[in-house]
Image (cartoon, rainbow, N blue to C red):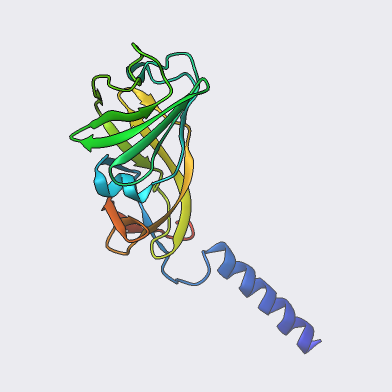
Length: 187
């Protein structure tokens, strides 16, 4: 009978601790917001070869109404496909300025070879870092914003340091506020 009372007491104590959040250990550090960074040579290199899709096209690139995919193939190069045609070229920043160097689009299309460089502002990468635990690599959604258009999300591996630095690979993209999550509710 004594062991039965001891077993029941242990179970009640365990349930009580679980209901209170587990006994006072500190929670994990998590990012408190998403991260938005302007496109630059280093930020686009961090997402090189990710394809950002725009289902309704990109008007500034002349692809309105046609699904369009844009990728940064390096820190200074881009590729676009839309409606069976493709273009590639050089990207410069201060927004995104696309200068076509190779294209299957025909003149007078904005992505035709020899056309005027196309500038799109703002041009930024948004990472869904809110709630991401610091210290571990986490696959999270990234989108590309071109003017008022936002791409379909793609997964990228993000690391947030305990001090709030947001990185993809060895590239620091920005910083977020990191706070300690608490486990349990107050009563």
